[in-house]
Image (cartoon, helix red, strand yellow):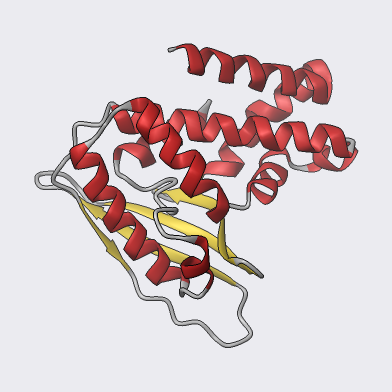
Length: 206
């Protein structure tokens, strides 16, 4: 899946799912660019000391999920068939897609050998009524071309939430859409749910 390759690339460059190392009450009051900056810096610090896969997975589950709108991400990744899914199917898709992203990310991050990276977060000018922004970041590593990773975020009552990650102009959610739709065309919504759950089980066993 192209989407998985984007997750792997973003994880290797410390981008995707790097939001979450701050407490929810604090994050609710932070500007989106400040949130990205503080948490990326902390994740950079953490993985230099610990790359145990289970530790990283637990960190993602406990601290990351609250800063991502996985329902919106899943809805965008599924596209038009989302409207035909029942509420039960929609929830199952959301849970499976969330697990896939977190598992793929932590696996890639635990295997990363990059320890000298820096992340430049571009300032965002936000109007008082604005509730949707893109936080642009530039991941730098000695001897390599910088990598752009942008976070598309929307403002909710609990703070800013990520609903898409764009790596080098490639959208994570839309790049999953073609493979998801192909599976839905073959085996329906339930077929996609079973496929994602099987993949998550495989990832959990590796």
